Length: 196
Length: 329
Image (tube, rainbow over all chains, first blue to last red):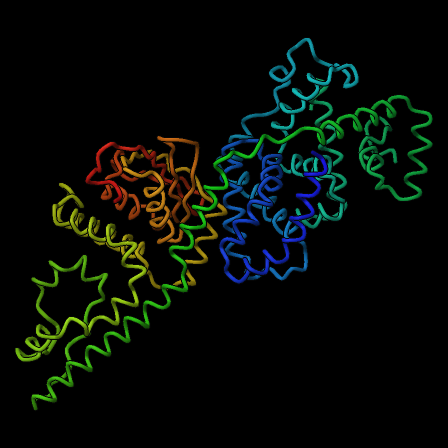
């Protein structure tokens, strides 16, 4: 099973340069194949930033439409996956920056009572069962500011380097460090039931 | 290193966890951790949490998403601007050819007169037939030239037809239907004549652009990207009975793209809404174009909220058993 998956990835890596070349030349079938190869990763990235299924569907569509339009300008300096990843993160953040989204999130602060219930206040992480930890984690991630959620997604979920995160989000290295620190601390406080 | 709360370097712990501290900072942190149980517990909690975030799986990709992306790309490809660029030279060439033939015919008859005004474009003719019939001609053509034009062999216009065939074949139902609705008085309804005329023009403009005769491709291209970036929900919720959902989506997508907007699918199965996202400047004309196409629930265009460059009109597509007169064919 694992070998099959690895073989699939290797096959995809082998065929990708040729697919990119054809797609840049306007071959729609080649682009469809690239969509097929990269859809799971783009979907996961966008979902981790937005944590909203319908919004994620919309943004993922936009990502590939944008990529298709911009493909003739793709010079191949970076890997296609890196290029798509950057489009995905940027589109997801732009989506959230829309006025009504800002308004909705601003009027929806982290409600610890709703997340944990009064009895759970101050529960250390280590004392939580795995299932309960994941449930609280999901609730708290959804309530974090999107900029913090984005760095958590890029670092802790996708294991990207600080340099890659800085380049993707177009921010300074020091900002990555401080934003990540604040995001992790707030997330921990929320999951433990302390004031965020 | 003591920039955190009560002398505890909380901010530094995160970077320590990722091995992002410099040599001196790291040594200082090591010394602090050796003597601070709170910070050791904090570090362990952060590590646990980072691991949990890494373990959390995204929901599976919806099975139909790849198909929707494909249809989005199809819709975008239908109104590809390079093809529009071709239409202008093709039309100019055909017009010059027609004038040349007229001149040649009259030269043969020994009577040369000034050439008639250029033929209107095929797309204009569809919508402006009645106006053209009643309006005084701007042409200086004599009776003979008119006769010559009437007796002109059919194949003289083949150049235009064959060149634009790919556009026309795909869009004939749209054009015919709009024209029919116009003839039947559907477009404009019971509104005042001036407003009806304005609306008629707007509908014609949108639909003409949808069939690929929109000018200024560069400007359109820029607008497309702005709609992808920022749009707000107009609150308009329409409904459209169609015989084929995908064909309905395709047509909505083309209307959106014709004015530099985008089309988005939402939800699944029958009754799913399709969002036509268009630049604010074109919102009203698209609103009326959709209404003219038979989209119900569109009473009056709302006042759009400030802030976004584009606004979305949600259209729920439902399958009707019999071919509806207003549905796509």
